[in-house]
Image 1: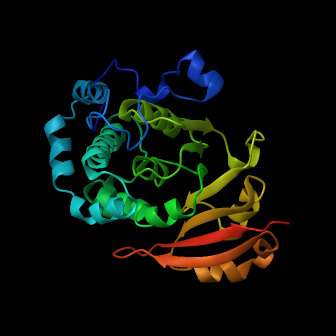
Image 2 (image 1 turned 90 degrees about the horizontal axis):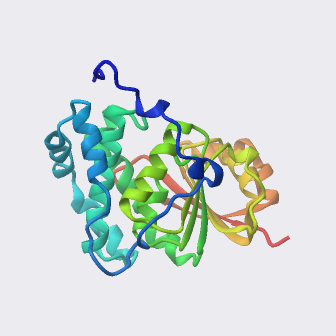
Length: 276
């Protein structure tokens, strides 16, 4: 959709000094916390969308048409309260589509009509599995538009997340979404995983969805995940071939189990970091 003349695109605006300095956002409530289930601050996106010719009713129509019944069992299995989680997930859909149409591409426009099936269900299908790992601190590599990290955080997986994304336009979206959704314990870092500064402590869990090759991803994760911690990788149909193509990952990791995701071609594979 063309932008009206004279408007400076959102992606060209510089973030505030504080967000540039720390890479963190300020949030209101922890996922699953009791209180109002209405996400905070969503109207800012609605005003921005309206000013660029995107009708809020069009976005609402897409949100209503989604098969939300597909993710309710995943939320229940993870112990999340659907009356709190679902409104936040619906609000997140609106944020993704509004930003995608009015600021910069953060996902394929072909995926807008199937965003719940393609992105939300795929992110949340293993939520119970991740929660049962007992990991409290998580790092998500190549966060993109926020999948799988933001849906998992909304479902109550973990108490802290670090989202690593190399593209500035997507980090701006992630920070704004986290703030508007009222999430806490999440920081966004605009860098590549290879150049990520050493963290004060190694994390318990690591996630990556459709990023680098399996062996390369695990090689980078090995420096970030504590011994005994887990890595959960979302991979396509050729994940077995990836594992065999470069077996060097076996020096630091053990492959535990693989979970095929129903109605998708993705599989989530769990690895455990060696103790030595």
